[in-house]
Length: 333
Image (tube, rainbow, N blue to C red):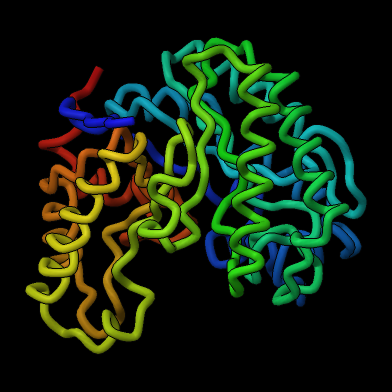
C-alpha cells in the first residue's frame, strides 16, 4: 500500500502529565511526598485527593479554547488502563475523559486516545503504569489480554464519538528480544483486527514504532505508524555541541520518514524543541524548533510534547508559542 501525504501535517499537542502523571512535569502535585509516580502517589495519605484536584485544574475549558484559537487541530491524550474504571490504587478518570471529548467536539478539535500506561507496564518508565518502575511485565499473556480488553472498552465507549481521530494501542513498548518483538507484533495484529471491526473506517488505529521504525514500517498493515522524534536523549546527541549536527540528524531522519510514509500513514506522536544540556539555550532551541517545522517529513500529523508543564522552556508548548516559535506554522482559526 503506497501512502503519500502531500498536504502539510496537521498540528497537534500532547496533553501530557494530566491523566497520566509525570512528576517532572507537575512537581507541585507530588510536593512533600516521596512518590515518584502516580501509582505511589495514589497510596499516600492525601494522594487521591491531590490527583483529583490536579485533574480538575490542570486542563480546563480555557485550555481547549486556547488550543483551538492557536490553530492546533489535534490532541494526543495519554491515558492509563484505569481511565474507565478504578484499578486500585489507581482511580478512574472517566469524568475527565468524557468532558474532554465533548470539549474537543465543541471547539472542533480531534483526539487521539493514547494508551500510555498498560497493565503490567509496557516499558520501564515512570509513566507506564507500574508500581515497580523498571519492571516490564506486559509480555505476560494475562496483561496482554487485559490491555486488549481495555482498548475494546475504550472503543465501545468512544468509537462513535465525532471528536475521535484515532486510538493508539500502546505507547512506546519496550522491546529487548526478538521473541518480544514478534509477540508484540502478533498482539498488535490481533488487537487491531478486533478494534477495526468495531470502529468507523475514518478512525485511525495507531501503532508505536518502539523507537525501531525501520523494523516496524511495512509491518503494521493499514494502521498508522507513530514515530517519536527526540534529539535530546542519545549519547551521540549529548556529545554534540553544534546545531549543525542536529540539523544533519534531522535531514537524515526526514529522508527515512519519507521512505516509511510510502509503506503506511505516519505521524510524529511526540517531538520537542528540546536540545541536550550542553547546547540548549533559547536561541538554539528556537532554531531547532524552526528546522524541525520546516522539514517536510510526509507525516499526516505531529504532536508536540507537551502542551504545558509547570516550568517554562522547550517542553512547554504554551511557553514556546508565547515566544513566537510557531507563528509561521499555526494559522489562528
